[in-house]
Structure formats: C-alpha cells, structure tokens
Image 1 (cartoon, rainbow, N blue to C red):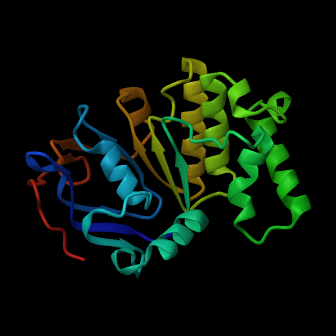
Image 2: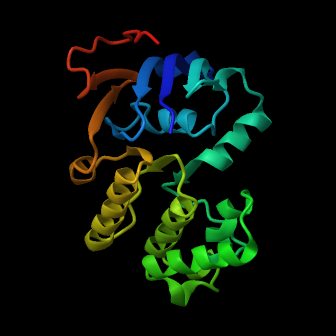
Image 3: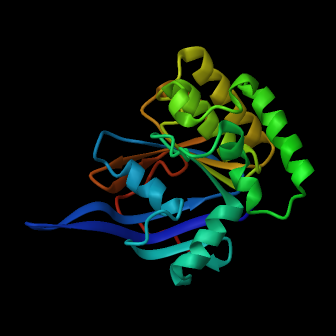
Length: 237
C-alpha cells in the first residue's frame, strides 16, 4: 500500500450568498497501514474529507497523491477505476443496490477483478459466514433491518481486501455487540496491512485507531501524529 497525501485541498459549495467552504487548506499525509480517525462536530467537514479521499467528489481543488499517482490529474473514469480496484467504502446510509440480493451485493467488488466465478462464490460464502448472515444471502436490501443492511455494507467493502478502507460512521446502526465485532474486524484488517480511515463520533471506535485528527469549520485543527500542528500548515512532500 502506498502513502496518501493531500496538499492544500479546498472544497466549497456555491450558495445564494456566495461560496460556503467545507474544507480549507487540508494538508494530510496518511502512511501505509495507518488506522486514521476523523472527528469533529457536525458540519466540520468530516464526510466531505472522506468523500474526497474515496474519490466520490470531483469538485475540490488542490493535490491528491495516491502513492506516486497524481489523482488530481486523472480523468473521472480513471479515478473511478482506481476507487473500484484499490478502495472499499462503508457508507452511513448503506448504498446497497436494491435489485441485487445480499450475496450479489457482496460479490460486486469482486466482479471488477479478474477472479474466477467459483473462487468468487467461495469468497462470498466465507464472508457471509464470517458476518453470520448466511440465512440472508437470497434476500434483498428492502427485506433487511438497518443493522443487517449495515453488516452487508461492511461485508461488501472488505471482501476484496482493499488497500484503503474508508468508513463513514460504520457502526451507527448496530447494537453495541455488533459494533465491537465490526471494529475488531477493522483492527484485524489493519493488522494485515489495510490502511483505514474512519469518520466517527464514537470515542470507543476512535480507540481502535492509531491516529486521530480533528476538523473544525473545514480546517484541520489537531492531529495526534503532529501535536504542534498549525491550521493550514503545509507538509513537505
């Protein structure tokens, strides 16, 4: 896994009153194998930062390096291909495909890779068993509870062992036992080399990580890896 670096990343939305800034001069280096937590109050820019990292948002300015690859110079299709092959995403609102079964949703990331069908079926079966949702494999998302949909979303994100796993409030719809199991799974994946970035309000979830940054009004205001951080500070590449 390569390091990830953001340099002077800004993101603004146009409003009737002008521009509304949600990210301001974000300079951030994420080392291979880190487990980074993004925290801050509502409206601080946490999900906006995660969407930039996940290549779900193209409207930012600045530089984004994924290893030696300058993401800011890639076309939309190239960014989408990079995200499909190298990243996994756990969404707060699930983002499951309604017309696919649980098993088909989980298989989706594998379909982008050159993996034989029987191997894919075996991997899906293993993940269904690991998440204790074998009995749900032929159901559709509308037939699942919110917690079950979240489990399927996590299973889909991790099945292809992504280099970078991004999670937006990954345990928000789970009861405490399930939440702890998901966080322990994340730690296990992290120990195996997956770089993880999570957005959370939970101090318990943050404790599973190795580093925490805080956002306020779009600014990166604290970083446990850089205690002397000054707002808008530029980190040399």
